[in-house]
Amino acid sequence: MTRDFLLVLPLVIVGLGAILLMIRSAVGKLTLEAASLVSMCVFALAFVAQILSGTIGHVSPYGSVFNGMLMVTDFTRVAGLIILACAFFTSMSSQSYFKENGFATVEYFSLIAFAVCGMLLLTMSQELITAFISLEIMSLSIYVLVGFNRQCVTCAEAVLKYLMLGAFTGAFFTMGTALIYGGLGSTQFSAIGTAIAAHGFLQSPVLVGGAFFIIVAFLFKVAAFPFHAWVVDVYDGASMPVTGFMATALKTAVFAIFANFLTLDPGLKTAWVNYLFYIAIFTMFGGNLIAIGQTTLKRMLAASGIVHTGYLLIALVAVSANHFSGSVILYYLAAYAASTLGIFAALSYLTGKGEMRSQFDDFKGLAKKRPYSAAAITIFLLSMAGIPPTAGFMGKLYIISSAIQAGQVTLAVLGIVSSILSMWYYLRLIINMYFHEAQESFETECSVFGPVCTLILAVAVFAISLYPISI
Image (cartoon, rainbow, N blue to C red; front, side):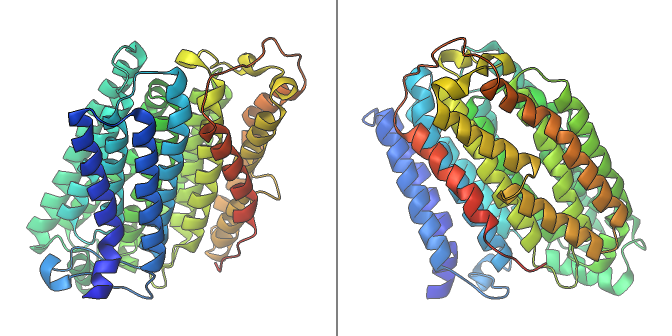
């Protein structure tokens, strides 16, 4: 009983923190700075609880009460740690961002906590209805966060597109769940895996159709080809901290449930390997083509996020359904999260009021006026490009190595080619910062949290690279 409570304690802490922030926002007795600090404390406490709840193997907390709907493994636990860290640094950078952009209220931090609740629950879900509820808790919070600035036309456009396309995603997931339940009489992952092992995946048209709809929903949420069209406009319309949060925590949660579902049975994974092979290729090179043509940083980073989804799909293709650990996927997600959150944390206080500095040219000469910020951004960009000795390089190395071990040599080579192409748009910003004269002073009004957050994440980029994993 005590062990079960410890396993769900991080979810309980974040849930109570979200409710507390929501109630305090209603009575209006909490300042924005205090709300930021409270949310940071909630996520830090949940992070510690997640570490202390370490588990070996598969454990179903309160299995008789929840009927096996939740499962905690080392994979889900580490995914939860990444999500909580993303939320912590998002709250940290938000305080600096809202010093100059005053449209936030206390509900903003409550919504981040509710989104994290959905994400944590999603990583632990072992049943399709539970996964759908978790997905909607996360998505509804993200929708509101994207359109939080009601005075911004771009934000309104972004949330409308995301809401409309997200509704289709929910419909796909619901249809897939209904088909699988109609064919098997259960929505439990264990029952689905048992049915596939006994009768084969392709022997049941209803199961094939249901799995297709569910995987389409996952591919949309991670912005994979051909469901990537929404990501650039939505990321461009959302505020800097929200964009970083979506790009990291949301992707971690969805890839966790995606991997858990795909590795239910070797037959399910084998049936989808060839399709994911081509989806990964089109996602990487399609994202590169979009990113190369961008002139604004947020749109470039959004397009580069599509490319990183392609690398993660390579890892999914290479995983073994028989001995799934997910270490390569989690390592890359952690490396990508540190780099992406870091650059968005830096941009949160450098872009100024109304994000007036948004173009590549707006950052010319930044290294001469803000050398430490320019150095941190350079570290993040080099990590995203996969340059040693950063965590991004090690993450790509592990992915390429796992693909080669799985016999996917072509996919590994194309991943290297894609990484080389991505250097063009990453180095473009570095050249502007270091090889041009400054056109302005880059003076901004921000709290100390923004620069401190950037510094911590810059150090994390190198610290993560020193952590070895087994493939």
